[in-house]
Length: 92
Image (cartoon, rainbow, N blue to C red; front, side, top):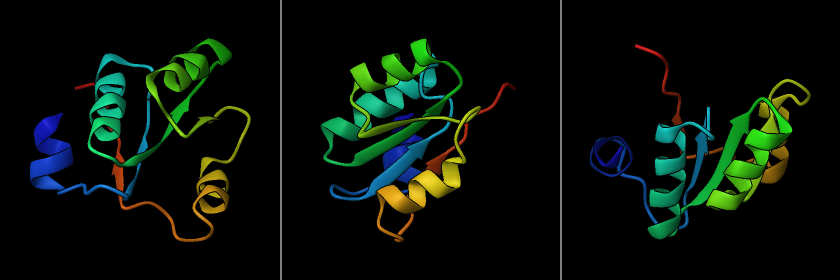
């Protein structure tokens, strides 16, 4: 996770990252690391329990991708600026 966020993509303090699957182990690690280094974190999840997990880990906004258009939410949350980095980890 460190390599993805900070070495490869060079996330900086004050930037915004979108973490898909924020309640997974990888997602939670990304949320916590990004927060520790001063980034704003938005995350997606598919249930209320998972959204709470994301929020507890420190997201600025947890987005229910089953009920909300995450692109529209991101656009609104960032005042039309978008995010600097999207972390979209999948099952390998």
